[in-house]
Image (cartoon, rainbow, N blue to C red; front, side):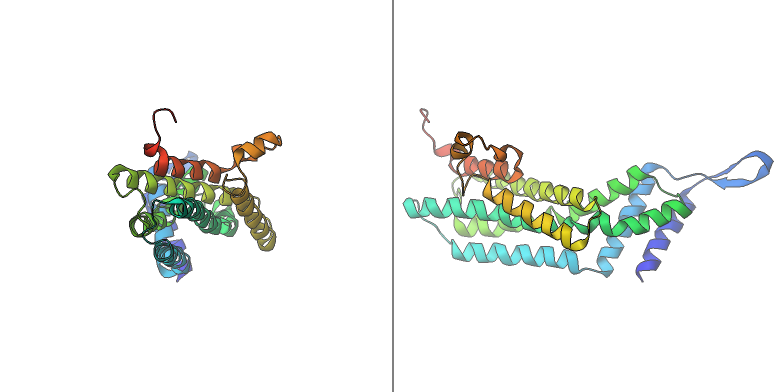
Length: 257
């Protein structure tokens, strides 16, 4: 059961501690090292995810489904005007999908706060750095790294993006991973305020829409500068979109720009 996983991890941490003594001969258990705490807490998160795999399944299956759909829709785009338009569109849509997928991290800290408070109040077996580091490593590595690779492995090849540039594929994958990680970190920050579920989802949806609006595809950066409204400077999707465009078209520029 889920409770067995949680308390089993706590028992492991307790066993890792060393016996000490204080005045009067009373034995106390010292807290395990930070690395041990991170490893045990990460193991608990992995076991919990394995027994409740819906979140990871939705992330993986959703990203795989979108990658295949985009590959089929934009398959073998040409180099004419319409092909360039399609490339701009897909390079905008992929990071927007990853921003939306990253918003699933909204309840990460909000849902764990009750368990964390209970364990800190009663056991104090692990510290704050170990807890937050283990949560970040699990969510960012296992949930946010693999789904973007589906777009790089499937969509990139089917669409024919930079077919003559081998290193561009790795750059493409790295940009997508960083985009997903950044959106997940923003979602975690929103969830850390412990708003209600409805309000947190509303804030997350509004942020995703604002990121898409100011990314530079729907409204040009020149227009935003002209109107003294440069919100793209605080938009992580704007940097992602620009990096993808440079990766796609940068090598095609002439020496005169």
